[in-house]
Image 1 (tube, helix red, strand yellow):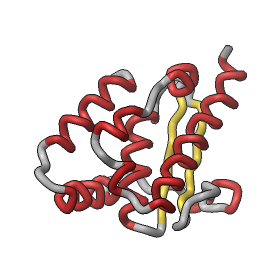
Image 2 (cartoon, rainbow, N blue to C red):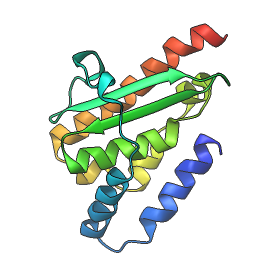
Image 3 (cartoon, rainbow, N blue to C red):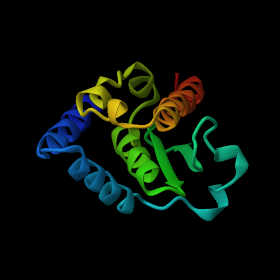
Image 4 (cartoon, one colour):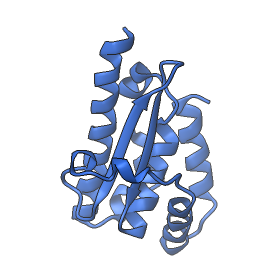
Length: 141
């Protein structure tokens, strides 16, 4: 699936809920289904700066020149947020990640329903994902 198709699926999933409490509960469920990052990657080098809670993000380039992300967080809402981003950008080509817009986050209403510190953390997560993609892009060009 392309990034745009995954984003459209996420928008559809969130549109099924009437209020933000239901959406928060859904995000928590998404966080629970996040593939756990290997403990060897839970290092200071993989902590996303700018997040209120601890968020670890690891990326590697697979044999098909796609980026695979794994992540974890010590906060359940944040874990749900990062799971949405991992689902969206994992197993995608670095150039597609770099070029992708993140308007779907606004469309599901996520940014407006987060505290300012969590919203800053979300921006930091996206920035780190794009930085990994940029680094891998130089290897596959």
